[in-house]
Length: 263
Image (tube, helix red, strand yellow):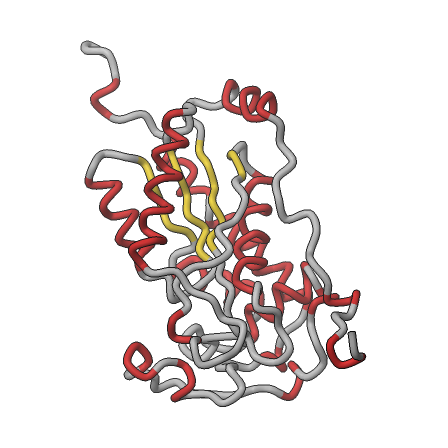
């Protein structure tokens, strides 16, 4: 292979992203809780400018899910690594699933978990374009199944303030301060040079769904990655871990009508 075609070892595959539990680990963890809860990271494989890897959203989702699993007795699942990234189709390397396919994957995972005794599922979403995940959770909840989508916008806003992230959630749309900070904390070896000078603001994106990201950015970046730091990434994950507590409690609750009569 010519020098320009070689893949640098510094930017090789990321190890340690897959859970190492055995079936006994899952059984023992389930014996200590009233209801087993599985956590599924959902990422994407899409452009994140010239300095962040295509797998950025998956790495972010996995970092959040791992932090949750370190703090709570949940069943951590391997990530969904390709999702709905159609708005990024103009950039090489981006791969997408249809929303119908992603919805079906989530439904199949939830059904399979219930058959093995895990009846609650949290989708930890790392990609803002996965709108269909909200529909999947709404539909499952309407059927009386236990499912949640995390983090909500409110959780991200709390984390942003707590971590000292200067960029608003509106401005920090893609490959900006938040995502770069989390990767600086969790996988600094994967960042390429240049994020320090790649800021780009495009707050008015009202035609994004029609025109795609390329109508608003040449580089693929919308946000201010120059403000990112590993310390902010650490604090973002700590805040999100704390914000997960009400979700865990809600999904762990027994239904009100499950109490014996007269109690």
